[in-house]
Image (cartoon, rainbow, N blue to C red; front, side):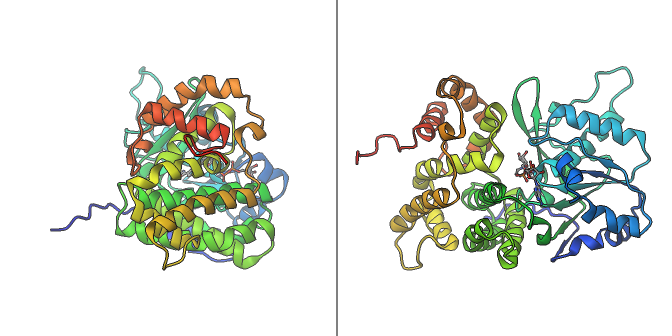
Amino acid sequence: MSTVNANFASPRTVLVSGGAVKQVAALLGRFGLSRPLIVTDPFMVRSGHVNNCLDPLTAAGIPISVFSDTVPDPTDTVVEAGVAELRKGNYDCLIGFGGGSPMDTAKAMAILAAGVAAAPAGGPPAKMRDYKVPVAADKAALPIIAIPTTAGTGSECTRLTVITDTERDEKMLIAGLGALPLAAIVDYELTYSVPARTTADTGVDSLTHALEAYVSKHANPFSDAMAVAAMTLIGRHLRTAYAEPRNAAAREGMMIGATQAGLAFSNSSVALVHGMSRPIGAHFHVPHGLSNAMLLPAVTRYSVPGAEARYAQASRHIGFAADADTDAVATAKLVSGIEALNKDLAVPTPSAYGIDEAAWTAKMDLMADQALASGSPGNNPRVPDKAQIMGLYREVWTGAPRNAPGP
Ligand code: NAD
């Protein structure tokens, strides 16, 4: 009897090569698209990076319209503004160009625009929170072409978008085929300019995607293949990409690893790290990958007993453990390997990041509720209750494992 229960979703095509962004106009042409709205962030415009996308479109005679008001950790209000912009023009697709924030904004605009169009006249307007999990956000008003410039969230290949509810200070997970891009362009040359801090944070985000997809209760042979490939590439290239921004092999390895990690978790799931990370982002505005990195050692240490063999394999794939290591040794090396990686990547503690201890303690109860409500902790190989999640937030604050023997 088969024990596999999988539903693999991916963009219809993914162009992967250095310089692939030059093919953006040809890619639109293959789908009969010619009137894009480009969604990006203000830095991409100010720095001229967006021209990597605009120049090939202009050369092909495609009219250029840009919505560049996206913000880090995109909000429902920005998405609403984007939908208003969308309704002003006769667009036939959205191009999300940038890190996860612009790509997620484009996805959310497509989902909300479909909801606005379908809402009955005189009824309440569609809101972003109408689409948060467990709702299936399967409808999009327009197809999305995703072009990542960080390595990365993997959003170019996922059926997810993460949008902050500004009234409730909650990072909402929105999932469904409406968020899945039609096509993606994965061009590592776009990441040469990513600063070291963002290289580290986005790289740890990718590593966390792959690891969580691999140990998730929803792991399957398709997501495993992507997760293993991603862990191998990220384990090999993250430190080099951080230290040597112009290293082509490292940038390419990280870019491909990030996309594979996106495919892995989108077709499996994320788990406890992401569940606990989103509330830290919502309340303390810590970049997403950085809050993952802060949590990763403590949450991994807590979770290992739920899937020791899987965590041990992950440790070997990342390169922390040797093939000959026992599972117990390999999992110990996984936790120490992540701690060493955090040190090399200069990951601060929440306190060193500037968060106030009283504010952290006061929010722990709400953050634990929001983590549980997201559903992600339920995918973890060891499922915590609220008190355990609060204990983990406390442990991450002090930086020391609870009940650990003293020095
Ligand atoms: P980001 O998009 O917020 O970008 C971070 C910073 O890097 C910005 O200042 C941006 O301007 C800059 N930047 C981007 N590309 C650059 C480049 N090539 N050169 C120089 N600077 C560059 O950060 P991110 O980590 O890519 O995305 C984070 C967002 O993605 C969060 O909101 C997170 O919740 C979301 N996310 C989504 C998914 C998904 O599947 N949809 C998965 C993981 C994370």
